[in-house]
Every structure is written in structure tokens, then in C-alpha cells.
Image 1 (tube, helix red, strand yellow):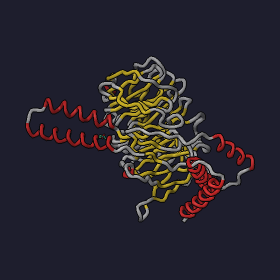
Image 2: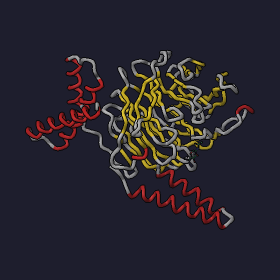
Image 3: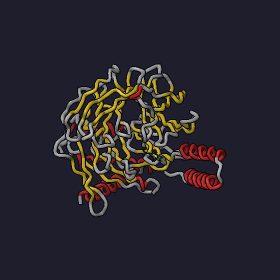
Image 4: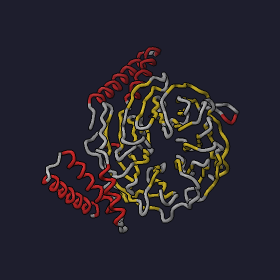
Length: 441
Ligand SMILES: *[C@@H]1O[C@H](CO)[C@@H](O)[C@H](O)[C@H]1NC(C)=O
């Protein structure tokens, strides 16, 4: 009912704006812009229940007038532009079952998108309201039936349950209590371990907190890196890692006993090799590879599949020059074949094995890219940075997979194997051709 009412209101406001605009004979694209703004005001009105002061209103109008025209972007690999948020999207996360993408924005909503519709013309989303606050970070729980958020004003974690309705959509229910406020500096990231055993939160002041799912702090880590620029939980759920002002990336293991009880946080290994601070890092899906991007002007790929308990160190596989800047993000495709690095508003895609630059996506967003992630199957790369989320076909991933299979074909001994590889190559090639033949938006 509420959605229907909002929709009707939006239409009404939109129609009014169009009438007025037609009367004064404005240009067509200006009308579209105004209509979108009317929709935004309606959305804002529905979430901001409190009274707005006259000053705030004037302020808003001023911002509206100064607002530049809608950012437009096109690229042959663009698969979808997910539009729905009326504020800046600051974080996204794919669910581990591969079905959903969650995004949060300063419009006081978290949206849940269906990955199944990425190639459709319409991209529907479900909307969870973040009451009296907005979320700056969002992460799915391992079972894809809940998500955690970082609250901008509350400075704490709020958990939302996704309760399935008969029609297959969800009701969203916030946990009765938010986590207590414990961080003293700006937050960098949050995460839930895939094992479901802990939640992590990290702030710029070198503090990482390990929480149980009820909001009790299990451990506090001081990273000793002067300031931190990024921290994350590994996809296997065993490790927590951080980077910052110092050139080393530090990795800890969060240890639990046989009965599932928390034991300790132990140093696991360091990635040593950069000659300046590290902006960001990412893991492959099995945590056997890591990629790091540094102020020293390179990204590095590491083999982290080592027995660190026997003092074995991770080893460096590749160092590749790339442009980066404060706030740069990096992503590694789940199979470890493709590295994506952001620099301001742009994203570069590299082949991980050869280090070759494969694609440059320039000016993807109207503001700095704030989130970057491959989907769990490695078919798509998504990024955010303004109101829209851009989803790209991972063409470099398809090409790298084809090259690997061609290599195997050359070495294959038996006929059955050769035939199977040949068929897989043909399939992958036609999937890639289809992707390149059908650019969206
Ligand atoms: C990692 O991703 C690859 C490619 O999508 C997939 O085949 C593999 O099963 C995934 N492994 C894990 C541990 O999720």
C-alpha cells in the first residue's frame, strides 16, 4: 500500500512538473531532470518524517539549482545501470548465494537487487528503510537471509533480517537493538565471516574490533599502521587483514575452539614488498590469492596459500604499474584471473597472470568510485560512486578463461579430454561474443 501511494504521489508530482515545464517551453532533457527531482523529493518526504526547517528547504533548493546535469556514461561492456537510489551509493555487497546485490545510500534506504535481472531491461529492487539514520556500509550474512549495516549517525552496527513473504519478496526487520558505539574514529569497513562466527568493524585510527553476532566485543586489534586505509574479512572467514600508512599488509587469524568458542586473534602473515602505503587489497574467493594496490604506483598479486604456521611466507606473483590515488579500491575476480583497480572516477581491468591492461572504464561515475566488486560467479564487475550502480560484463575474465583452456588443449594427451576442452572453448567464446554484441543502456 505504502509503495503504491508513493508511486501515485510521484506520478502526480512528475505530471505537475511536466505541465509547468511545457508551459514555459523548456527543453526535453530538463523535463526529465525535473521529473527525477520530483521523484526524489517524494522519496525524501516519505523517509524524512520530521519537520524540515525553512532554512533546510532553501539549502536544498540551492543545491538543486547548482546540481550539474545527470551524469551519462556508456561503454560496450556496460551490462546494466541500476537506478533507484535518490542519494549517493556508498557501498554494495553480493550475497554468497549469488542471487542478490545489496546497496546503501544516503537516501536512508538499503536496496536489494536481483542479479537475475541484470540483463533485463528493468531492474526492480526491494527497499529497506533505515529508520532515523542512513547506512554507509552494507554486508550480507553468509546465509543471504540478513544483512548488517553501519549507521552514519548512530556510529554503530544495525542488523536487518530478511523475512521471506509468500510472493518471494522480503520484509525487512531491524534487530531490536543496535550494537554499542565503540569506535572513536571514522569507520572504514565492516564484514561478517562466512563461517558466521564473527563480525568485524575497522576504523581509520588503527582499531579493528571483532564482535560476536549479538554485539559483544570479542577482541580489539591495534594494527599499528599509523592510520588505516582499508580492512576486510577474508571470504573463507578465517582471516582479518588491514593496510594503511605503512607498506605492509597485515593478516590475522581469528581462532575459535572445537566447541565454537572464541579463542584468540593471532598474527598469521604479512604481505611485504610495497615501498609506500597501501590504499586497499582484496582476496580471491578461496583466499588463496590476494591483490594489493599502493601509493608506490603498482598493484601486486600474492600467493597466500601457504602454511604460515610453519613460518612459510606468502609469495609475490606479479607487480604491475597502475595509476591509483587516495581512496583507490581493488577487486580480484573469484577465480583470481582479473584484477580491477579504481583511480578516482575510473576503473582499469588487468589480466592477473600477464599483468596486461585489458580495459579502461573512464569516468564511470560523476564522483569517485566508492565500491567495487565482482559477482560470485565472476561474470560481472559492479561499481558505485553516484546514485547509479554500474554493472559490467567481465570480458577480460572470459578471455583469460579461454586462453587457459587453449593452453590445456595444447598439452592434453587423450582424445576425450581434447574434445571436452574444445567444446568448452567454443561455449565460452560464444558467451563472450553474445556479451560483446549486446551492449545495454
Ligand atoms: C570460486 O569461484 C570459482 C569461479 O567462479 C568457482 O568455480 C569456485 O567454486 C569458487 N570457490 C569458492 C570457494 O567459492
